[in-house]
Length: 328
Ligand code: R5P
Image 1 (cartoon, rainbow, N blue to C red):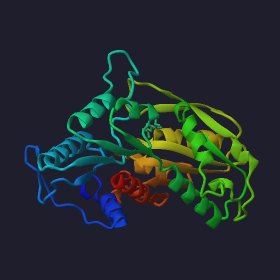
Image 2: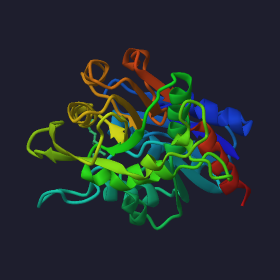
Image 3: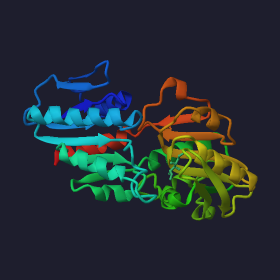
C-alpha cells in the first residue's frame, strides 16, 4: 500500500502515515503562475493499492482538481486500487436544491470522484449522511464525534466543571448529530463519555435531553443567520453545542449567545470541521463560548489558532479504517 498526500492537509496525512507505519509516497505537485496545477508520481505504484489523502477545504476548487489529478496520475501509473480519503468533504452543504434553480454541487463532486476512477472513499462527518448515497462506490463515513467527546470529557474533569450538562444543536438540521454525540461510548463497557461529573462515573439522566436552537437563514445573504429561539431547558446548565462545520462562526456564536441569555451558566463547543474564514477567529474568541474543540480534518494555520481553541486529531480513526480496507 502507498499513501499520497495532496497539499491541503499534510500535517494530518503525516500523522496517518505514522500510525500506519509507512512513509508518504513521492509525488510532485506544482502550481504554475496561471494557477494551473501539474501532478507527477515519482515512484513505482504498479499493482499497488494507493491511498490519496486530500481535504477539499478552501481553496476548494484547487484542492479538488489537485485530488483528481493525483488519482489520474496514479491510475496512469498502473495503480491497482485507488482509495480516496477526504477528511473534509467540501461542497457538502450544497447537497440539495435549497432554492429552485440551484445546482447540487455535492452530487457533481461525487460524480467527478467516481468518473476519475476512485474505487473507494473514506470521509468524516458529512454535512448530511444522504451524500454517501450519491456514490455507487463504497463509502466509509467516519465520525469525529468520539474524539471530540473525549476531549470535552477531559476538559470537564480537569477543570472541575460542575453542574448539569445539556447537549445543544445550534440548528434544526443538527438534531440527529447532537443525539449521536450524546450516545458516544468511550469503550465497550458502555460508559457515556459525558457522564462524568467531577471525576465521578455517575451517569447523569439530564444527558437524555437535548436542546435545539432554532436558526433562520436568509439565503440571499452570505454567512448570515439568526438564532430565533431556544427550544428546551438550559437554565443553570453547562451547554455543550455540537456542530459539523464552523465557517463564519455565526451559527455557533448566535447559539452561544441565545443559550447564555436563556440561563446557561457555561458554553462549550464541539465541531468537526474548522472551515474558518476571515473574521471567524475574532468572532469566536470574543463570544460567550468558554472553550471549543475542533478536529484536524482541515489544516488550521497558526494565525487561525486562538486561546479558546483546542484541536484534536482524527488520524487514528482514519488510519484504522485504511488498515481495515487495505487488508481486505
Ligand atoms: C449548517 O447547517 C451547518 O451545520 C453549520 O452550522 C453552518 O454551515 C456553519 O456555518 P457558519 O459558521 O457560517 O454559521
